Length: 410
Image (cartoon, rainbow, N blue to C red; front, side, top):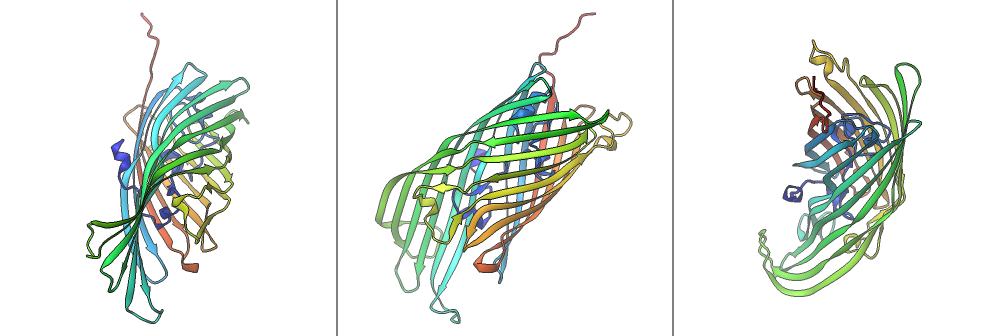
């Protein structure tokens, strides 16, 4: 658990709300442009749709790590930063030939920013009269449990429940030239609650080789509680990193809620089993709602409807090749365009990403190592916004085994 408490974000946009939403996807799904709602496999896990667990035939363990590299541009200058963290740990187990379940842990949202605002008496004056230092860290994690069951007519249905928990610390330090004491405003938020989603999948053979797959997921609306402390105090204006409170002005507790509306995800794809697959996915959701939340007490940001469209797929030259290791490598690629729902200075913050990667088999087994790369851009420099160019590297290890195998005596 402690490994998930490390700083795993460096984006200024994680300043808003409860941070940047983490993709609830496996590395394989992300490298295909974040598609996965319609896809299922007998030996690969997908986090998008719990209905896919009905197709699982091997006990599957998976662990992933990632490194985020970011270049931030405000129109006049740029900075670079990076952060590494664990992405998820999960295990899927088949139940007979018609069902399977999954449990694991992964980030739900991430916070990690450090911003400096310089204040001058006028735009043409180089003398800085005050500094505002914004910083934040933390986020929320989710422990999830999913179950899928296959009905007749190639219809699978699944359900996933998750417990969300985490802490977020935000602070604003104000220093003024010629003033002995500085002022700090700090909030410590303890966030927790439950989420759930239901999914459905359908597959049909078009001909001897081609299979058409379709899927849908509904993330049910939920409320997260936000209980914490708010502080406002003065401190000696030393200019260093150490904070020594002097006079406390505000020290109070708060109890608020964060409402997440229902999200719908639809997907369809066409492919040849264990050979290739190409699909498209679309998701949409109404705006987040905060009830007088201290995480959202600013006038420059608001929330609107969000949506995402993704296109991607994979190709494996020869899944069961004995003579050539290279023919068993899986190649993946895709792209996605997302309207995050965050609006800053009356400007929507959009996200565009291109992803690609490979799945490297381990020995002659179904286990594999997956490498994923993602390039993209978020935001823009107009209207006093920040443009981010990001490069994310992800690595996952997937191990497969058969449990409860009935042995025959010769």
